Length: 278
Length: 247
Ligand SMILES: [Fe+2]
Image 1 (cartoon, rainbow over the protein chains, first blue to last red):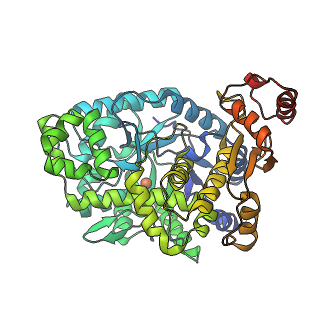
Image 2 (image 1 turned 180 degrees about the vertical axis):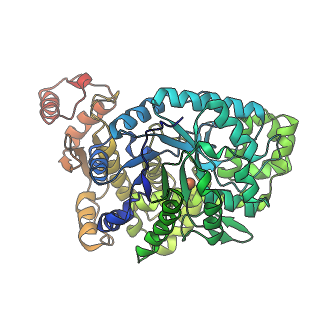
Image 3 (image 1 turned 45 degrees about the horizontal axis):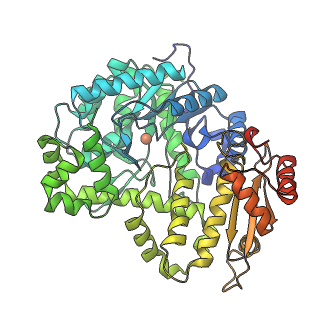
């Protein structure tokens, strides 16, 4: 799943172009970056150059949003070829995407949409996750998504995730904010949830902040990490034996004061300094 | 896997206006259209409608964000008061059909909006339609691959013809942050070209005839039958605009 010798990359940021200057101005406070894979698959010169600049200063990991592993039918081999090329070009230690679907028929909805959680579907996704891992040649991590729609099904979300990653023997990108948001919107206990998934497979964490829309908490990546997510982090931190990286996600409402983001990085880093005895 | 019909039905419910009315008013027809089992139909009928709305709004938000980011000059050419109505009409008419190339969703959305302005946009937006086409061509040239095209022209070369002088208008927008109001129409033919191994774009003004020759190359159909046409072909060859198939 993850090589034992794979080093700890640290606590970093999801790279967004809007943040570029601030990231380089405060690079000493950022250990690593995560880029959206799809923005670099076509390898146009501008993208290649940007990736070179980022990699010169930071360890960088790729994170996909359009693999659509849950779409019925086979994976897109062209996509896998492009991803494998990117992984080699970046010398990436792993790659990741979401346990969801974003395409159906000829529609590309661009929304991480939940699957119906049956054993049959878990097995089908696991087969494909194993295929991604073989094709790309580095560990593949699946991320738990935020979902607003939910369909009553054979398996709970925690059982479904566990089935998929155990069968595929792949890693987990655990988004703690997604766990919290889902626990609020779908009325479950987030502590019970994290107790029910294989935490030893978590290679990377995501943290972010959301906003309310009516009676629903929405994962907008637009606010500081909420206190409940920090508590969840404290709860799991010393049980993440494979963890190599923590990424703070911020996609909009970028604060005037970049320190607001750095404060979240610092808090996460302190948590793991304690756990790792640093 | 979640069955294909169920996923297609959910995707349409989230992105194609009118689909939800079909589910509510004619469930049997809806089930037949997507080959849904009774259980799958039950899951969709039982969907929390406000959450369905929330998810649909999130998709619309992302699509419009792509459009705004990819087409800044176009946006500044459209009166701010018209944006909301125009966007609503665009979303209603143009579902997010998958773009051909991976990683091209922002450009795909911008292309869809440019086509919408050209084909279905309300009267009074020809200038914005021209600018949108120009901005999309620039993005397509930026990301297009010189060699991986089945056209004779490389993917880094994009052709367009316009009612207005988009090069001057776009440059004016870059300098002043706004588009000149009510410019005089001036038919313009051009090629947008990305220099090899760089991200620099160059725009070449073309005569109508040279444009027509290159356009035929772009569509993969070309057999030069005059000295002028052979001269255009030579120029395209020298400038590195052709794929191997075109050389
Ligand atoms: Fe995430």
